[in-house]
Length: 493
Image 1: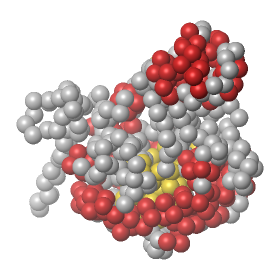
Image 2 (image 1 turned 180 degrees about the vertical axis):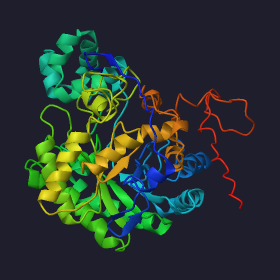
Image 3 (image 1 turned 135 degrees about the vertical axis):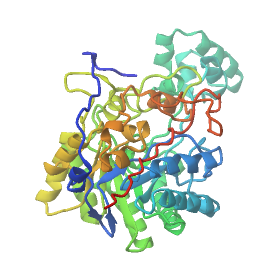
């Protein structure tokens, strides 16, 4: 994991909390309109992947329990985790790729709305991603998986003949890393060092070249299912290391009209939005998650992010949720047998900064970029609500961002994981009972290993409690302990 050179350790402290009366007059707990949907508060739980599904992508009992626990805190919005729009193996990640998932997703919506007494709106984040494989064992890669080319034979001074293949592979195995890198091309060397990964620029592959033809339909079908399941809307995943963000990226040099220029890079995201908007009813919310900055060499910066936001808002997006970083481009090399993880380089740190940071600190690193995007939209006559996330944990911190017009809605991701009851506790004037996230990124470490995500602040608490669900190894509880609001006795006269 990339860490800043300054290595300054920060401690989360929040010793002031509002009274219930103050909360009642706040912007954070005041209403806001998002397209056709009215929120009771400007609090938002962004999509987080907890690895509670199964290999089939089903809504399991663990998935239901996970979201029910968040819903008990009654945030304004819960965005259900990144959910795959293709029916392909993707580990314990939710899917919405066929009608067979409808009954489970319907139960999920009902569970959230019941647990929140109807106060929480429910969106689902829908995502496409390309194929990625684990870093191979070098011997197996060179002996089996590497497709030999004439250039390999030439480099090793062997005739390009079938009977020489074993000799070529043996020779490759004997080379030093430096010599091997000079024989392999850039893609082959990267596949060996990081694992095979498809890119949207691999247009020599027919299924990659055809992405602009197939993705609008796939996203459209997924959104139709989301509406049928009772979700209030969808969040199109146009951020981080995945397919749609790659089309938006400044690194996209496709020459088929879907890359190279900003207009070309915007073309598919706009077509996907258009297909989804046309297929769904007017009272169904359609927004997206984008990046304020990719934080990679030759990547999209804030100036272009403003133009991207304007184009998406102009097209009619009901909201823009803005993150940053989280790219494969600068990810750390995985161990042999491991998969490259897009939150291990500098761009990953900027997406999820930890308590070990630089002089800027880990809290609110995305505030000014989001504020610039929002201001740019308003200057262009666009009132699209902008969701800010990243290191928000305190009421006054969030309230000041809203009052200063730096954002319209505040996202609480890791803080909501640390204490799903944050919203209810603060609303009742009991903020001093909030369990504050320490930003150690313990949860992110579990996510990297595709383990069930929990929080170190509560996952060892009362492990002998009867009936609690535990992790696969039995060492951690899967849900934060239940918190019950105090009973206020009526005043008698």
